[in-house]
Image 1 (cartoon, rainbow, N blue to C red):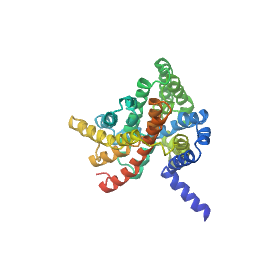
Image 2 (image 1 turned 60 degrees about the vertical axis):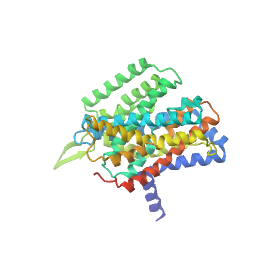
Image 3 (image 1 turned 90 degrees about the horizontal axis):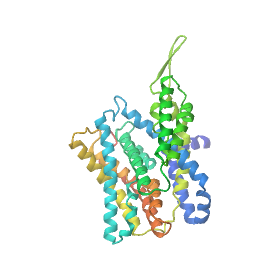
Image 4 (image 1 turned 45 degrees about the vertical axis):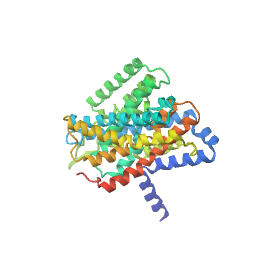
Length: 380
């Protein structure tokens, strides 16, 4: 009996991404009990590298698979005009929070804090995806809409980091010289019928990782351009006495990595979330409010505008659902932490900004409550 209870508890935790929350809570508790020892353990360069630069690549890959499947014929984002809408929404979801932040520091009379304008532009894809899964039924177009929006947000965020907060030299030469061969190799492998996802990971996937790493961009997105090249669609196998079907490469990849990715998300939360809760100040509330309020305002507004100028809104995606998506996208968390660290030097202002990024997690229960109140779970 105990083993079956533990098994059900483990399955529930895996299916609902609870390991991510557990890792986050553990980091906050340890950091506030013994910050020095937490920093000594969690901030080892090798641990950050293993979790953020390597492990998270597989989470982004699974997210990219869902987005890609949504763009296939019959999918909720199959029309280019419909797929353009979440891209517009991503732009609006960055402009409105940034504007709110700048307005907030202007009211404070502290223009010297303007360098933090990009902090509330961020959407944490891991937590926002968790919110979408909790709110919307399986197959709801809001889920791939949010994923595409979040991935576009992250991509634009990386551009912002490279242009406005350069931590090192960005080499487009290295990026092109390695990424183009990676894409060509992935295309060729699919053409000749390679079906093992491991070969895609260790061939073009590894080459793409080095392309982003050496090019100065975040290597966690390395598998995003490779996943669409994996064979997709059931494979019919002739057998004596009948036929059977083999799962496609994409499904095999997702099935194998489902549990490991949840463990990676535990490490992701644990490594990045340790901040003293006492570090709360005006900048905290500006960052948090810009995320939780600015994101839904920008996303809903640009979605409405895109529909008005002729882009088709995804069938079954109501404006109420878009509003809920906007609130869920207000979870800045780790990407916002990256921006904060790049914007401010170590000290009180940085700690306050980090707390604002972490408190944006309140958007998750807010989105869940709003989703239930507005009854957006099913496709309308």
